[in-house]
Amino acid sequence: MLYKKQLMEFTVFLILLTVSFSLMTNKAYSAGTLSISASLSKESYNAGEYIRINGVVKDEFNNPVSGASISIQVDGPSSVAHLALVYSNQDGTFIHEFTLPPNAEAGTYVIHLTASKQGYSDATTQISCLVVSEFNGLAVAFLSLTLLLVLTTIFKRKNKNIF
Amino acid sequence: MKQKIFATAFLTLFLLSLTMPTISANETLLFIRVEPSYRSIKAGEAAIYSIKVESLTRFPQIVTLSIEGLPENAIGIFTPERGRIPFRSKLTIITTIQTPAGTYELTIIAISGDEEIEAKTALIVNPPEAIITSTSTTQIITKEKTLYANVQTDKTVYNQNETVKISGSVQDQFRAPVASVEVSIQVVNPLGNVVHSALITTNNLGIYFDNFTIGELGYSIFIPGVYTVFVTASKEGYIDGYAHTSFVVGEANTPSINFVSINITDLNGEVRSEFTQGEALIIWVTVENYGTTLEKAYIWIEVDDPNGAPLGVYFNIGDLEYGKAKTVGFSFTISANAYKGVYLIKAFVSNDLISRGGEFLASTDSVFMVN
Image (cartoon, rainbow over all chains, first blue to last red; front, side):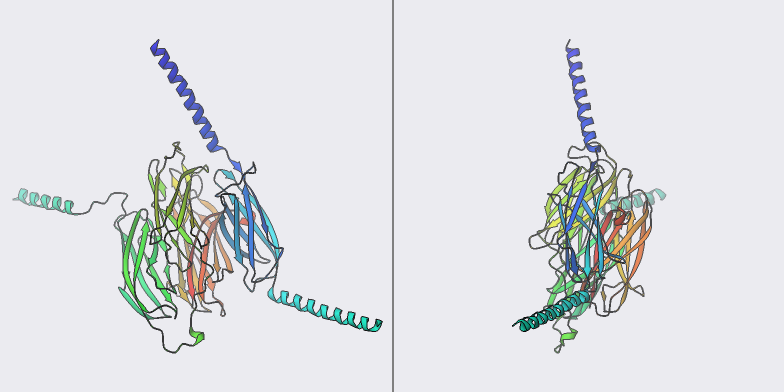
């Protein structure tokens, strides 16, 4: 009788152990899916200006994922302009800042991002911005000022003619 | 007679074995030598020291070098900053005319696994020349206060229940060690589970140590593969520094890539860390892979000016075979009107272009100076 009871207890223990083991391994082997979103504070930048990329990494349940690595490749109009590797914080957010060189090529810059974490499948996204060269920026400012002066003069002349 | 000789020889050998230090398989017994014992320069000049790192054992661990005791307004650059023993490095200390005159005792620190060894040398800074025109002065322009962390393990491949010894150092933008930095360490297994975490503080040499045994913390199921160590260094007033490294437990089914060193030479092959405007240099990057072979691996470098602006991105494509190291050279020309100051080299390895969904598997950095 005592032997049977011990055998039953041992069997229950074995079943519990097997269940907990399978739960553990299932949990360990279940691969989640990452999602990444990123944004820039502006759509257009001047050469020499600071670019700040903000983003967040989440799982398939919309929960923030910390410790995910975010690989960043910034493609300029004709070549790769910048690389970075950053990590997401406790709340899943990440920030990366870099300065454009003063002679940065003008045009569209595409920022490619890949979020990775062991046990999850990767997520990718891309954002873009326009970079205006310093010379172009000055030229635009000069043209705008000239246009403003011309319009003001025309307006003043018109007013003189009226009175 | 013969017996007597044998007995004497045996006794001598026995006594010698008692006096000789025993070297266990896990001990590295590092040795570091710095030459010369001192250098005397004028403020605004540079001093170069030669460093040799060796070990008594045949375990070729990766060693990271750092320096303590630098004067104000000076920077110390190791070329290379890390390497697999035995290796030689060159320490260049660049001063400015603002560097205070005096005698400075410099401590060169080499760390590997849970070992830390030091070597001493000295730097005598004499007052600068009496007449200094503004154009001849050098300013060490750097971006805001930033922490640079590095991390390494004592081995690249471990077995179950083995102890992994983690070490690293934290430096500022002048490559000076930063004490009392909070270092958060997380070790992630191939399934993404955190198998070890620790929060430690750097000592007065900017160094931290940690260790854990594979299989602790309830994750007793033996999971072979590539484990990653993530490190975040934080201190008030500084931008956080990050680093990661990987090691293999048992057998890997993914690549496990780590940087061994970044070396900078001039076009004649001389190791240097100080250059002038208009000069050309070659950046030599060595990586190794202890996981599965990574085909068409991208080895990248980016050179950033003292303001943090990227000046150029270069890459090389090729296979990174299992158990092999690969060295790639990238040439870079400093423009004639380049800023003077500390230039940062960032190096990465990726499995594809990030624009095609690739990811960086390893990263490191180094610096050089434009005077």
